[in-house]
Length: 254
Image (tube, rainbow, N blue to C red):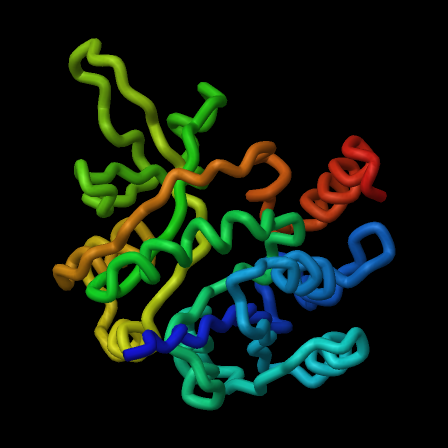
């Protein structure tokens, strides 16, 4: 019997009403709207059968369609990107769904492929994400840098804004930062969105802890992508826009 290839779809949740930087999806970075930069990067991922922008705003939809992108309109009342994603997949044919961050304009397409592969290798695995080593000492105590620890099979044990593992003993080890790129099986995504927020999720303000608290496996892959400052950069403030443009100039990409 011929094995049917699963339909792999990338979805970029993009809302207009960002608290810290309203309309940030449309903010120009070196002359190009951020959502277009994200879309351009994602479209180079060989594993994706299609890429969609899930938005609640006609201005974003118009900007995406103007550059040939595909849009699915969603409710403006979703409390999280996961909920927006879950609504979007009810309107799009997909077996595996990649949640692509709309505020990461320099994502390396190889990272998408790394995160998808575990679900292709293991039909029982519901979800996967990425991590990379923390290299800057100042990031160990930075709560904005989310850390992750995994078991010997690579499944997440815990995510935290605190330093984990805490170095009580001098044992050689690495500290890993979680990279917020998620891959779900469609049915699991819908299940996850239907679950109520959990205590650890609320304490840490980390939605991925809902997966662990409900006892599901979440595979975490160490990405081979380099230049983490660039590929993992998120735009949340006016200063971030300036830094994004500076990084493009530094790398000769502006």
